[in-house]
Image (cartoon, rainbow over all chains, first blue to last red; front, top):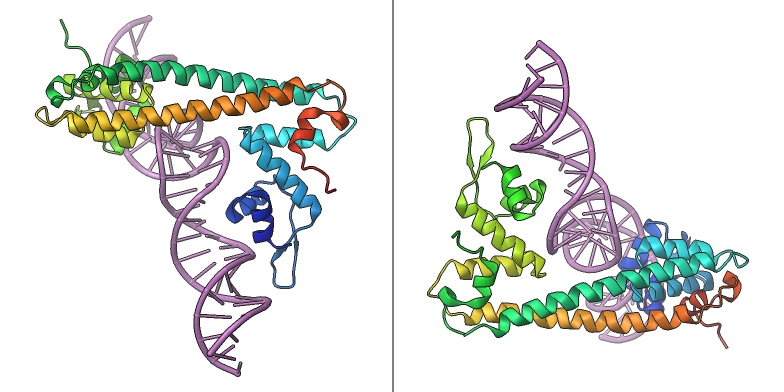
Length: 132
Length: 132
DNA sequence: CTTGACCCTATAGTTACTACAGGGTGCATA
DNA sequence: TATGCACCCTGTAGTAACTATAGGGTCAAG
């Protein structure tokens, strides 16, 4: 199948597919006489894997490691679990950070009196306190 | 004060200070005879504002808008509130997305039996389902 | 004078795409 | 056959917000 079909089948953009091939995440595709990329089921499987992992927020680096691991079916699952768990911890951290941030922002916005900038609580919070 | 002192005073990197000047977020600094940047309290105030807004997750674009607004103290606070509220909504969305993602990832990791890759639930979840 | 911290500009790299320019291919329709 | 449109190709550059590096200058203390 052509690149457009592969892209559509996996919910990926054509340009992104080419990008993944360029960075080595996807193996080079066979070509037609017109130099069009021609993909088979192996590529479909691999790109699907990539798409799912990206959707779960794995970085391309982590994803690449997962792919390498998944190619050796006798490999211990520990390494996979390690990557996934570290990723989960990062997401936890991000949620924590964002939640803290959200609280602060909400506090600032709630204090806004909707007057002028001169007495705006939001601006006031951002501006440095006058030296006393 | 020199760039290093300004950077330290605001918890910003020297390179980032130069970057902000380059993109126009910080006004051009006065220079010493040695061509070193020389900063006064105006720059300190402005960079502090930038740092705080960045810490609250505002994009440079939104931040730039806030700075423009804050320069006109008679301006209505509505625009400021608008920017901040839209930012808050984005953070809310991000938290939602990450929370959903976390749930899915946790589910997958919990299903891991710690065997081999061949029967790894994590890999299995990422791999496309066999055609049936 | 030497040394080390700091300063400068210019350029490129990071991450993961995304957009665009310019040109080729294939198929359906008039 | 000609045309039009969707799709394909490579190469390059842009996005956001920094960050790192190369190569060179300045300043102050020893």
